[in-house]
Amino acid sequence: EVQLLESGGGLVQPGGSLRLSCAASGFMFSSYAMTWVRQAPGKGLEWVSGISNSGGSTYYADSVKGRFTISRDNSKNTLSLQMNSLRAGDTAVYYCAKDRWGHSSSCDSWGQGTLVTVSS
Amino acid sequence: DIQMTQSPSSLSASVGDRVTITCRASQGISNYLAWYQQKPGKVPNLLIYGAYTLQSGVPSRFSGSGSGTDFTLTISSLQPEDVATYYCQRYNSAPFTFGPGTKVDIK
Image 1 (cartoon, each protein chain N blue to C red):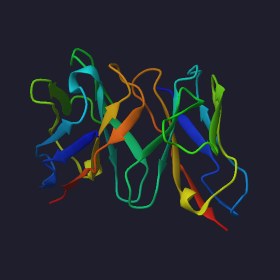
Image 2: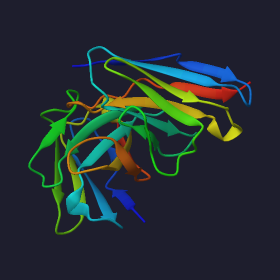
Image 3: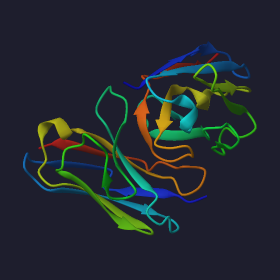
Image 4: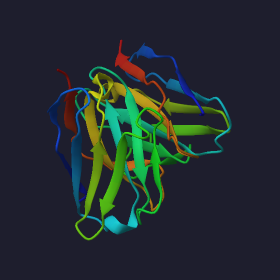
């Protein structure tokens, strides 16, 4: 069974940094692309960032480009999202999701999410 | 960037009704289109990928169609457990934008 467990969320001041992690199990992590999607309170889904199975290709939404960095450690089955220069608009539940194959595509498994709150 | 729109933004239908949701891309995306269901308080669930391929385990009352810029998600016979918000997502090229969502409830 695919399991994705996010961690690292919390309250951070504007301009601050946070690092999210996603521990994956139940599948061959190194074979699949991974994605971060966020959802602001009461709002819709927003695609944030994606990374290929090897980590060689990364993609970002314009809203986070230059501030967020996605990475993965295939030896530890872990996906990460380094978030810098955080703004109030980054407040959301952040979901880690598994893509259907090695390059970014649709997501067939999702974690439960971790809440990031950016506020002074 | 390619923008995604959905219509309607919300709908109310009776149990057993046929429900159709439309998703439109501002440029052609071939069939790189997925549909997700998000029930209240739950995480999203993949229903359809490749515009019309049903994800394993998804009831057959869900179907998808379309190619290029115009796509539809159809629920052939609405059930109480289908109350949810439905999102389309393109994945032809980054950024892999979601549509704004369509909220479906029971009349």
